[in-house]
Length: 474
Ligand code: ZN
Image (tube, rainbow, N blue to C red; front, side):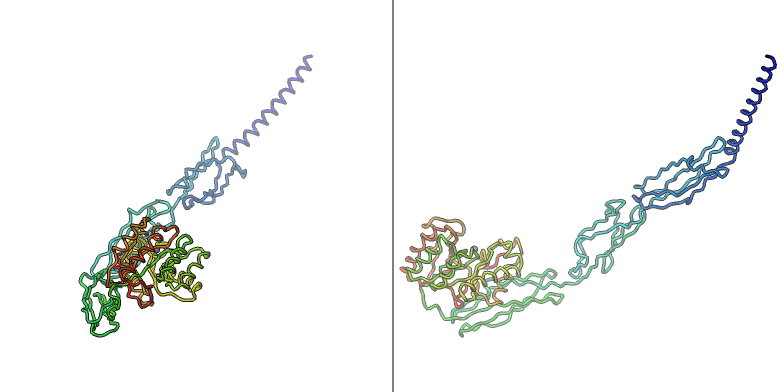
């Protein structure tokens, strides 16, 4: 027994020794591993990114005793990629005997320049000896936002320089060119009509004019041309104005010296606007036919099914004149071009129906309308000259029957016309033959009867008719 026990004890000792050796070996290895200081290699020590750009950190490797311990590296980053600044990223590896830290510097930058936007023109023409009134500007930086308040302006002789710097010192500079140069001619507006009819042996009195200039206060207008009222004919008065920058404006007025109207009782021109219409135009034509009275129709564009009424107006000896294609003020008076575009459309339409081009026109609202200035201030003053230059004769009116303003009562319409009539002049009566305009239709017969009884002559407007004009009022 004793012997066996001895043997067992011996074995136990051996086993213990083995374990101890094993432990020592392991510990030594570990200890060596930990005791030998770890190494940490990082590809780059400084990185730069634009803000909001994706941050890609550098590659790294950690090892000790040739063993890769990269997975033990802890990375701590303070980088805020939306915010410009300098940040550190810490790479750390800890062993029982070492604590190794390495830093990587990450710079977040704003590389973009701010943008300055100028309001108003970039090239400004100013009257000589005047200073520029700033039209405004805005500076936007992608990073800083609106930095308009930081803009500095510098006025030089021929330009204004706008400079701004964002918080990252990116600078932007833009310029506004300033020319002290007046390129706008004066405007001359005639008082009275631009075509005046005078009876022979009467006296011409110059109605005058108004001149305005964007730069100069006192502009001289040179009025030239003579009117010999003792001799029949057409005379031209020329008005010319030049501003101090040599911009010139010239317009003319025509004076027609004519024989006295033969009919001393006066003439009536019945004019119907805005038609034709199915409800009243045929009936108006019937009355005119029955009484043997010619009239003038200033037509607009309607459904083609009404074309036969325009044809009938023409065939029954009336004047088919031009009012408007659209009769939409915002279109018609948008511009000079727009006006003529509209006019030519109705002119072409009438030509297709009658085979005759008409040059007799009436402006929507008349030449004195004030609605056009909402769309184009001053357009009427130009248009009355333009239509004249293109050979059109435009007609306003000197008697308004009132149906355009909504009067539907035949008695009121009759009174408006008959009390407005005047002997010794051309009475141009404004009426309408738009849809359902029964007041005017019902007054028409009696108006004609009154006129005939009073010795007036009814005529249609032709190119020889004295033009009745309002004064542009825009
Ligand atoms: Zn009209």
